Each structure stands twice: as structure tokens, then as C-alpha cells.
Image (tube, rainbow over all chains, first blue to last red; front, top):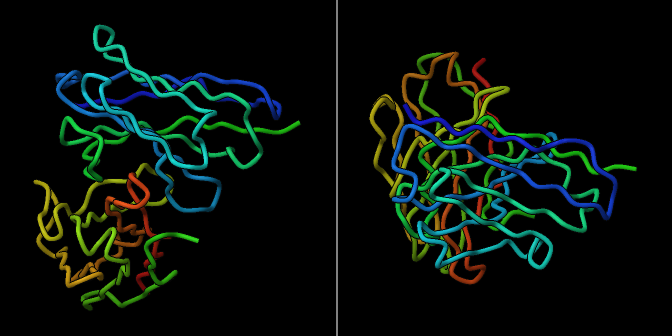
Length: 122
Length: 110
């Protein structure tokens, strides 16, 4: 059974940093691309970032480019999102999503975690 | 403002057929596959339709997807109370170099 478990969310002040993690199990992690997708309270889905199976291809939404860094550790079956210079508008539930393919350039998210909440507020 | 445009709400009675539209452009729907996600209240999104009209295993055939030009639609036939959820369309956008989501449609079963 595929499982994606996010962690690392919490309350953080504007301008500070936070690192999210996603622990994956139930599939061969290094065969697939992975993504972070967020959902602000009461709002829709927004793709944040994606990383290919071997970290060779990475993409970011314009809203987070230069502030967020996605990475993965295939030996640990884990996905990460380093979030710096956080803003109030980054407040959201952050989902880890598995891609059906090994590349970033798709929208085929076949499994999702339950999300970890990030609140940016003073 | 979402790149893909969906109606904010839709409704139907049990047994009815409802459709949800998704409008885009040549850089997204017009040149890439469309995906649909269902988000039941308080839960994570779930893949409902992939590659325009394919259903993952376990998704009932009451759900169907279609695409024409720069628009797509999701049809739900034999509407049931458990279909009450938010539905999102998505497609890769060549201009953004990333996935684009619609704003979501809240489906109410009356």
C-alpha cells in the first residue's frame, strides 16, 4: 500500500524558515517523480514544486522560486521542501504527491499524503 | 486567478447527470493531457481521471472525462450523495513550465 506521510509543518514567523519532509513507502521511491502541492485555507490547489526520479529535473512555481528548494533522498525514501523567507501568503496545507511517471513535466499525481499545515504569522 | 477556469459551483439531484467544465488555452489543455481530481470534505485530493478520459482502477464508470480543443469536461452520471466534493481540473502548462490547476468546482448533491 502506497503511503505518503508529511511532517515538519507548524507556526512560523514571516521571514523565517521551515523544512517539510515526506516519508514514502509501499512503492519503489526512486522510480517516480515527486511533487509538493499546497492548498491555502478555503482555497484551491496550487502546485509548488516537482523533482524527477534522479533529481535531474526540478521545477518551481513562480510564487516560490528563489525561496523554496525541493530535494529528495532516494536511500531514505524521502522528499523534502526547504522553505525560506516565508510570507503570510505561504500559509497552507502542503501535500506531498507521487507522480505516475519519473519526470516532472506531468500532472499525473496518483497518490497524495494527508498534508502538513504551515502557518506563517507573527 | 487560476490558469484553468472552472465554474465555482455545480449541483444536481440523486440519479441526475452533471457536467463540470474546464477552460484553458493552447499552452495547457490545447497541447497537454487533462487530469481531474476529487477532494472529499476534509480529505486529500484523489486522482479521478487521467490523460483526458482514463479512469484509475477503482473509480466508478459513472465518472467520465472528455477534451475538445482548449476545453475539457468531467461528467458524473447517476449522481450519488457521496459525490459531493470539490473537483479540480489540471494540465501541464508549457508557458509556466509547470502544472496548472483550475480553481475548483464545489459539487452539491441536493
